[in-house]
Image (tube, rainbow, N blue to C red; front, side):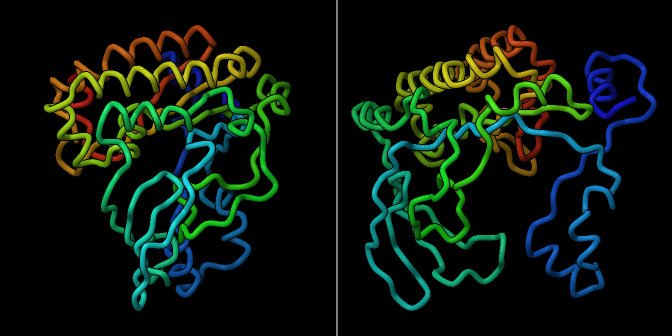
Length: 287
């Protein structure tokens, strides 16, 4: 079986010759430690083949951050500490010289969305039809961001250039976008969103509804041409022992929209819709 045949058969609960071999990529600091312990340059370059991974291909660039971004602003710097406003409008504190590659030392202090009026202003930066969301850029605007996280990075491939390959590939074709909780947390912060669930539930409904619409608008045309096997909704909404939303809140705010997104993706031929919980998922599955 090809890797693609194997994964699709597994999704359909059909017999397979073996389980797919899919592994997460080590952090830069992990590779650096392994290099000191004897990992060769050749094995580092051919990591996928060395681990026996089945491989896969993406479906193109789909940027879901603010366009245009907020103007970055330094509030103050002292020693190795910088207080600044990032491209998402978030006031944060970072180490100027990061101690460990791949693990940025940061602390979020204040988020831009606190009221319905704030969200109306934020929506102006989140038009799903902005061409730069799918068109690769050669150069990214300069940034103070120490690791590029949440920043519009250069590179990528336009989905139109991958249509034929996605139909003929022997490896699984996947896509990945920011999910509902992930995005609302980027707008409001973890604490802010947690309080809104109780104090401003209508605003939470509005944000989750907008993002459901945003994703379907962003992906409608591409998925009508590409052959994509799996879509991952990145949420990162769980700790080691429980979720960041209660099951009751997940059923109220997320489940109806997830059902609509699932129907949308399945109508486009996507075989599996995956949530990246980033933590303990029993409460999520029970929902």
